[in-house]
Amino acid sequence: MEQVSANKAFGGVQGVYRHASASTGTDMTFSVYVPPHAEGTKLPVVWYLSGLTCTHANVTEKGEFRAACAELGLIFVAPDTSPRGPDRNGDAVADDPDGAYDFGLGAGFYVDATQAPFAAHYRMWSYVTQELPALVAANFPADMERQSIMGHSMGGHGALTVGLTLPDRYKAVSAFAPIVAPGQAPWGQKALAGYLGDDPAAWRRHDAVALIEDGARVPALLVDQGTADNFLEQELRPELLKAACETAGIDLTLNLRDGYDHSYYFISTFMADHLRWHAARLGKD
Amino acid sequence: MEQVSANKAFGGVQGVYRHASASTGTDMTFSVYVPPHAEGTKLPVVWYLSGLTCTHANVTEKGEFRAACAELGLIFVAPDTSPRGPDRNGDAVADDPDGAYDFGLGAGFYVDATQAPFAAHYRMWSYVTQELPALVAANFPADMERQSIMGHSMGGHGALTVGLTLPDRYKAVSAFAPIVAPGQAPWGQKALAGYLGDDPAAWRRHDAVALIEDGARVPALLVDQGTADNFLEQELRPELLKAACETAGIDLTLNLRDGYDHSYYFISTFMADHLRWHAARLGKD
Image (cartoon, rainbow over all chains, first blue to last red; front, side, top):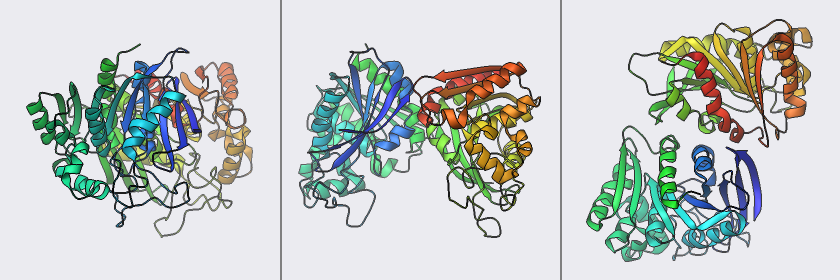
């Protein structure tokens, strides 16, 4: 693991790191904020999965999470959203043949692809749930018994599906403007078909609403959604998550935020609220 | 004035605007955050002047000022750092002939240039002290009797020189890692010679330490400076401001921040402190 940069911020260190990923067969870049802490203590870890077109850098620069993480004693990890080329043979990583922003590079959808040519590198599920946690555990003062996960948009989809699949590991799960049912929305349908094939049965493990319908459970979910979000009605559809949680008896807090859009201006406004909600479920030193 | 974008954030609106500037003869872009407020009320205005290479966007995206401005009821205005081409005849705006980052585009140093070819457009002093305040007063719920000014690096130089020159207008003056004595540092010497000519006597009105030596006074100054700032010893030289303030009897609070660098990770860490210091001097509704 190579340190790309390290900047002191709010008493801690905002770092950016690069490593050769076995999951994706490429170099991967991610950021970690470590708050001020007593030498030798281990801290809870909040995972943040980003949305379409983003890298680790968007939330790192615009997310306004460091003040709250410093106050609450939380490590904050932000992975990239897809593999990016070249791979270790120097070959390009497959992209959307049409060059669209919603599939391929920057749009890994947090799945392990089964379809050519994506299966070779698009293994973001394994990357964010296995490889990167092991790397973080080995290199940072992280208490891996106290992890939680959040994300935005496509990364909200990732946080919900990862959290619902591994409820014992992630003590809190929340999202900003998540894609809650990719199998029922254009972005998700395109991506899941492209990565996992045309049979929608294969998509259900990567669809939060379908996971809940199929029996996945967490004690509680927190979702914030702006009402002025351009993607609300067609792509995000929080009402489907609300209905699924009601049927399943999951305690969903769905905050509809009047006038907020899909941007980091929205995310940063409610970031500290989410981090406090996570900290309450992670236990604080 | 044209609205480029508007995003709800922390209950208020983060806007970006463009207008044809009479001062510079070019279009100029700036950002304004208006916090939540009761209809009809007018709010104090904090001016933020940015550093070398920046536009309005750097602090707008990375400054983490909105939470505190929303809490304190402060409008936050961020201008660009230089004119940028084309001008109204479609001609390019003069740049450093060597293409360096520290002179020309993105490096206006908040002066009205007297030297060709810069005198035609580089009129940032007039722009930030006259034209843009009038535009802000006309278009936003701004109480122009309650203004203050802050800035970073070259913009800290701008904030100090503007604040020292117009002490009745700006009720608080602060800076992050400012160039305090451009006449005694390479960046400043290059820029002031280029914009104002080779006679250092012409530079003193645009040099905070020289202004204080020549009799300019403000009741108090607040400066934060990181000790790991690469530019500290050669370009910023806060000890010169400290000595000038001691001689002049100006109440300077100079916070040397251990391990912080010159970046927005540093600025964002101490932004809320500065805004509280400003709010205390601006009076709060």
